[in-house]
Image 1 (cartoon, helix red, strand yellow):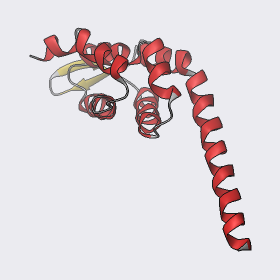
Image 2: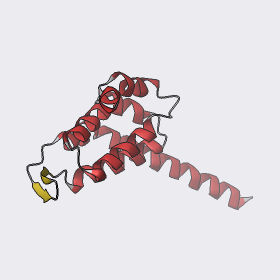
Image 3: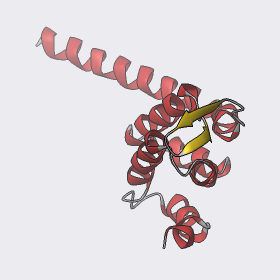
Length: 136
């Protein structure tokens, strides 16, 4: 009996901590989107010529946002929608056509967004943007 109440208390504390953490990251969405939109001046020489580098920070931010979306927090889709995260990611993707790491990161984020039945507004933002027509 005592073990069950301790477990319930632990579960409540973990859920609250998770909620506070997710809300904290969502409150930083404008800054995260600016990082994704940021211009990278660094160039890298490849066999195809010189290309602008994306930078590891952008890739890590995209990974963080994908995990955040998968966390299922109800405030996540609204924060992503309000700050036009998906269009910013798609714009970055097309600005770097030869960066397969960036393409994989954006694809992972889109796959986290697209099947979300309750996030209709976020899905509409994907479908109404210029992302899909540019792919076809």
